[in-house]
Length: 484
Image (tube, rainbow, N blue to C red; front, side, top):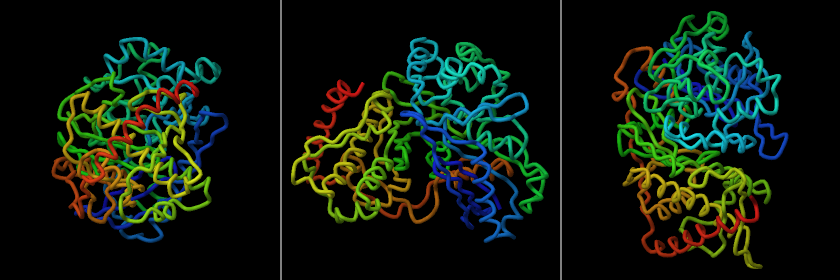
């Protein structure tokens, strides 16, 4: 048996698979996000440990014998979070999360240094880790002075599980401190934020062993002490391992809290000007590119909260047949946007509202707005040298066939729906745990699931969607002028 632990923004998932990669069962525990000021997004790392305990307890209650047979553990987690520890490994402040935009000024200052783009292959986005540390230095100098280690969220879980300060390439590529082409920390970039390599975890590939389970936790959970823990991956690279998106030209579209258009690459292909992320993959000698939307299902959840109707109820009102855009447009910039604008200050908007704009019209506009944001990412990937011919849909929002029809039509690409199963980040983490424990060939393990159905673009609505996309694109400069 192999255990995957995925630390998500809204919860921790513990997934158990057997040696044949069949999912045995899972446990889950919820997490909340604190937003003490506009643009801030934080979590207490102690809550991650509590949620991990609860998720494993649920798994143990349902599958005690199977859990006791675990031979390897893999980790996945939300990226970019700044978890600051003192010399005694005590947490100094709440973790500043990936969707926190307070460090926009610091990010711009670092990005003005051409060495950051040259070495990392990316814009320094406000959500990345390095500008967060610059913000702490500028605004919480007493805390900054005590920082002995900076860990990414999943690597804080690793510290608790194993007592080791270790990270891996895919997650570390999102800090703005990694030389992404060379797959190593950059002393030059660390120095630019008044840090050095001693304050960073050591680095391994995601498929390698990176610590072993402490005896105390093993005894509590009925496991063997010393079980190997894989390097693991950031959540998107872990999802790619779960989906088998590891070869050049393979791609998925993820409809989660944030949205991702992810493409695997066999070589390092940076193009920072496109605002596409170019990161190391979890497998050795592979990389990937991502277009990132900060509010994907978060946009529909926001509308759900405003209307008092569940997200499923809202999408059900649209029926099963894709409709032509109504003329109402939605910009899903509730937390700013990354690809293609790198704009933390812009905010979302509806345009074209009229008396006849019903709740269903607003829902349709939200789904289309997110679909058009994915189209922005597709265009940015093309500028970075990556051409896609089809994508596979994952994430909670992919349960909506209407939404997938809108995405297929907006992208002009077929969207494959995998057969029923759990192929997300926790599954990818479990796969990495299997590889680290057994030494198996990563490509033989990280295979793609069977396709259950394919949604083709609606050719009859292609022109209407193209027109709506042009309206959508024209809105950003107008909205920016009044929200910046």
